[in-house]
Length: 182
Image (tube, rainbow, N blue to C red):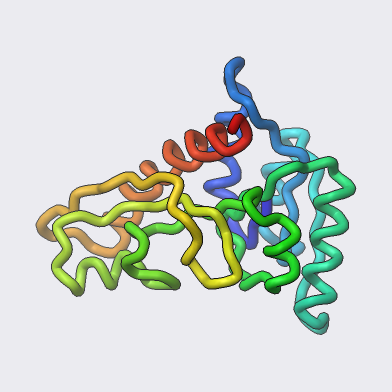
């Protein structure tokens, strides 16, 4: 699991993994931000962690070190959970078909950042989230699942984001379970 911040989605997958019928477990939580709060949570929950700041490193060198740590952990799949770096094509190719990402929009709409604000500005009646296989193109891999969330009158980016986050947690665990058992 790769994170850069609080680890909210990581926590959801971690707790989902503890269900008796869950087919996955977290082998490692890795971050490009050694101060990421999600690392402390993972450690407290007994999950091994790896952190390596990306500042001052070439992208390929950093991705290579992350890849080494992931492979050394014995992980067979990679889940991006708020990892805020674009990965090199080489890293992505090394995990082809085995790396997924959660994105807070109904892809292909609103790739990139500020998805909730963009949905509100467009007057969308529904927003949501998507889980997709990662490819070298940002937020563009095959969609494995989506959950729609109503946009309510008076919604703000914060209120919409809070509801989408709940949907993300459920969807991500289901899609990861399906990926590891296929």
